[in-house]
Length: 399
Image 1 (cartoon, rainbow, N blue to C red):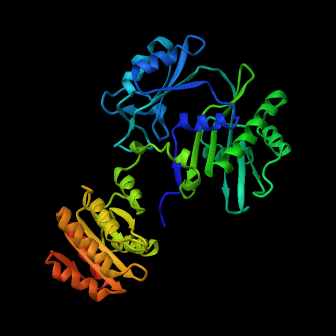
Image 2 (cartoon, rainbow, N blue to C red):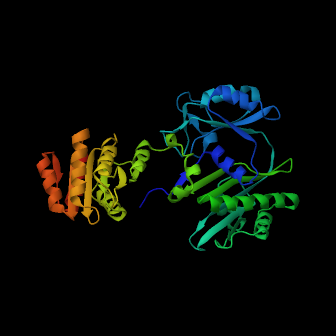
Image 3 (spheres, one colour):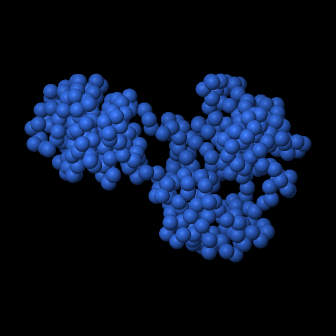
């Protein structure tokens, strides 16, 4: 299926998990109100503090807030101005290159200690299909995109596969730190964090751990300054505490609703909504819509275990999308019976009404019963048996 494989957490949440595993991270606190920000800022040494908007998107520093035009989601500020800056961020929508024009809501800010960086490195762990296990990736140069570093000098990237059964040794971690340009006490400190990061990657069922920058500070510390971490959704049953941190305000509301019913749903930018059983047929349906001049509004695989309730939920989600101009239901009945789909569609339409043209193509198990349910419902549904004809009709009705 095409469901996203990873849960993303906010920066402060990821750094909190790192700290629990012994990774060196900056001193930080979080605030959800300007008053909390002012109080939190008082706990840091020095005169300045770093304030960071917590939204699940890159490019925060160069972003702007939609409601008030305030520039930048990351600032170094005098501690006394923490409440003022938090006021400009909290409850507002941050727009960055990665969010698109819709932006993402900023409900939390993170306050972190102000420090001076001496050297910036890059470090990541991810699963590598080629080596059949985790691979550590490092570079002596950090603070910028790893793609840019690799393009400028491919030899600057160090890749070290890890045997998934044996894990990482102290010697491997130390050598990785040295290859990334750390020396002396800093190499030992970096190796300790690399060991701990590998432990996070394995024990928390991560799909990716990316540290940029992994920095040596002027005071001699080696810390993780910023991180991107993905967690495997398939491991939710054994990582309940981590998955309970999911911030649904950062996700598409329709995708959140679909997840409650175990529907594989991804919002797209077209105008023809699709409800299909099986990821392969769903992909084929989207391809055919493009070929006949249309554009899919979503990927939606109802799966083989769907019942009337889940089909009803799926129909509500796609009809509730304001971008949808027509709906195409394409079912090849195998495990999923055509009569179950038909009954679900009829129930949904009776419950929420039918405000958009609906084309249904049913083929396979119990197809005659399915067609009979739709015919006897008296609903204005266009039933077609041919795949291409159905796609063409859905596209025509969307224009």
